[in-house]
Length: 204
Image (cartoon, helix red, strand yellow):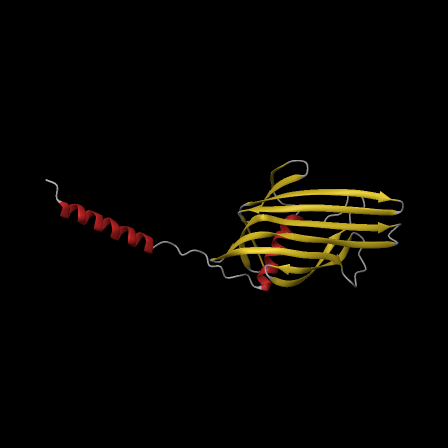
């Protein structure tokens, strides 16, 4: 015989079980932003991957490679270099993009998992007049990254301008440069170096 009380008891037990299950769900990552120091650590970790000549390549084509991140995940790197010459002036333009996917990395004691939104875009323009009689460097680093770190998560917008450092004297194959602008919501200045490739083109 159909007993409505039994059905009610079963439904009540199921509801209580569902409530207990929901109560044990892991809490979501919080939206606490990165500090200025953590923002620079994230940025430098990404640049370290881009400049790592010993990175493990797991795929790619002529102007595009996919490399493994140090602690898991991957980054897709693309680069184009254009060399133009007019009279005694040479202009080298390098464009590169780094698009991480579940990339796990660490810098400054902080561990990150990073995805591209769409990633980091770099543009470097080097102009040389004569035999280095005059020299000019400019460019930019822009883009956005989604990150997770130690129970927190958020996004980092990047809008930096690259220029030659005011007191730079150069050192053969590299030139002191400075990046200034906004990084993860913080006004930022980062001292860096740009390599000068006299045969194969520049890279930032």
